[in-house]
Length: 223
Image 1 (spheres, rainbow, N blue to C red):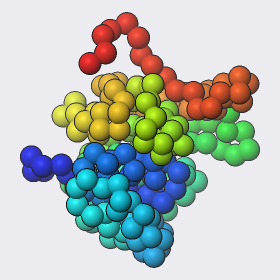
Image 2 (cartoon, rainbow, N blue to C red):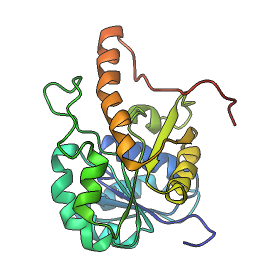
Image 3 (tube, rainbow, N blue to C red):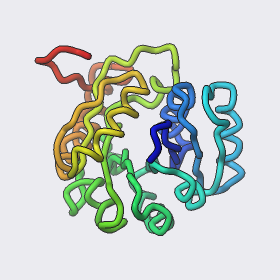
Image 4 (cartoon, helix red, strand yellow):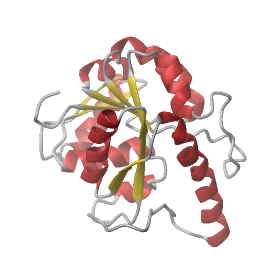
């Protein structure tokens, strides 16, 4: 990876979370490739980002081609469709840093924690993609609609999980580019905590009529 900003491929980049991440990273100057099930939809989403981009013009491609074009690949699809997408892009992500944002929400009881047999979605992704892919897990507890509002200050932290600190570090920089604090949160298996917390937060939002609660780690100074 060069000293310049790496090219980010956002798989499922036309969904709510993918769109929010893309808008902020485009504004921060990251070269973007938007992936979707169909190239036409991805191209339209990339075109819509053009006015925000402070770096290279965003491009849109079908998911596998987007994964091939990205230096860092970010998965933002729903948990139900993740296995099929992982299988499709597996050949294109070998040797790359892969960021999994997936949360195992099981409708209709999305406010109930329901982790998969593998322990968490991030481990499922690592198993599915194989040892040749460096999987890091992050961005579970950031409200997508708040990411899309570029003038909104995001009052939250992003927990970043991965088996190697050197793999987590670039993702922490991506979090900071969004306007939030990224924190090393330990090995990939620890992603179960943040994935489960998403269901807890959904329940809190419903109970207290909160517009997108999030998490903040206290006890040490902000950067």
